[in-house]
Image (cartoon, rainbow, N blue to C red; front, side):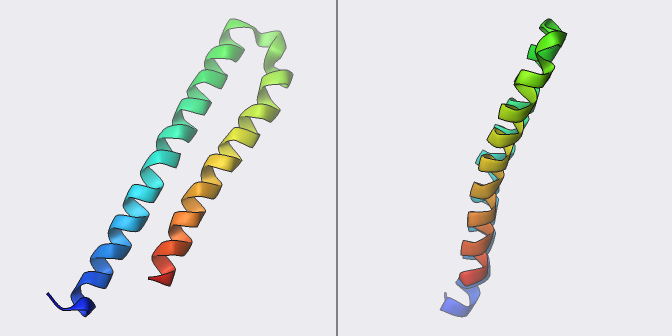
Length: 72
């Protein structure tokens, strides 16, 4: 195969695999935060900020994958 045909496949794999982990991570973070708030509603304020930080860091990894896909 010529390199011109492999570049779109490499881009698709980079963003697909690069978004899979953060997507699962964000889902698990949200699930456990809602579960924790459901078990102890008074702790919602203490759970919310670390949940948002964890989601932001996981999303940053997906953005790195998007940048790699654009640079290929």
